Length: 489
Image 1 (cartoon, rainbow, N blue to C red):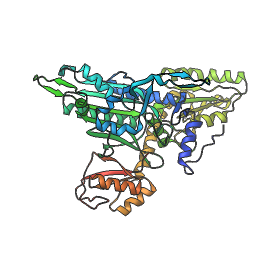
Image 2: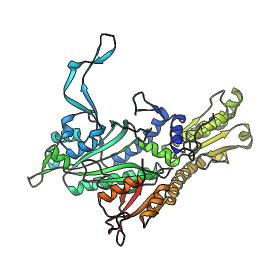
Image 3: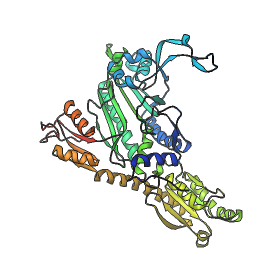
Image 4: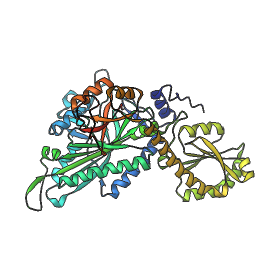
């Protein structure tokens, strides 16, 4: 097949869309800003989701599900929260349709709801309404709940996976008896996000705290993982929020302490979404399409046989089947592509486009030499291996590919991460793209002026702080923090 993919250097945005559509990850939905996640894209999401889910459950969290519809009055109870989401909310005002005089469909005006309903932009309000019913005593705490769900946030400018009006995510909501425990939870989840990103998505991330203007609406503190994309822009890949007692106070959620006093509950919330698929594409993809880390590749190994007729194919299957059984028993996700009337070259292009980490080629030549030809997608190189060594070789090579993709991404990030000591130097770096670490005076005014002038935002205030002796890159005042700035999605 002809890939027909725009070159990354020519038009990164078009390249990104080409990879998604031609690799059959997703398509555009009929409502502006929505997307249809196709089976291959959803298979990647399931593998990502399963790893997060496993780690959440290993740390004591349980999955639940809360309603999609939220009474408008719930959002009004937490002022900062509603201010943060007011412009993104989808609102249900009527409950039914009816036929008009022309046989078409219209809203039944008599079905106007007594109270409008908000389609879930996030679930803090409805969850804290329920927590008020469930929490009475310190014995009821902690509550460690996560849900896998969809949310709706109207977007003016949309891009598949990165920013759509409806998307899939997980949102954790926990309730605790102390500030210390809630803060510990917030950072525990951030560690999980960092670990999965590094060890399974092969994406290096920066971790740190968001500035006041960039934090989650309704949070005391927001922590994040930030990744560098292939065009040197940043992507917020996950956030974890310490909510303090804000939502507990808004919904009057108190508990009786061991000392028989009443206190408001402390909380955290946290989430990652399908935008991680966009990150995987942009961090690892090349001009031939996807390059998937083996850990989250739906097909880790594809076998492409060279055959002219059924007899050739039968001979190849007899040669390779004993080893395929061993692959299956060892947990490798593989596919034998024995489709007829499709050339091997077409199949090569298709599986390279879809980012399958390892391809095995087998025909009469391989049978005669008692070998197999293997192609590594991470480095686009072929090699041969004796068939008796195949199973160990595949396991070792998939491990190498996983590490190599991370190392490549990490080197790219390091090569495009800078420090700046003057505003002119800062602007020059930002114009070319990349991360800039520099002094910041901690004021929203300087942050806003930098953003207005350069389109760069504070991605995070890193944990490893040493602002001593530094000056704010913009104001020249004594630096309160070191911050990492970048243009971002």
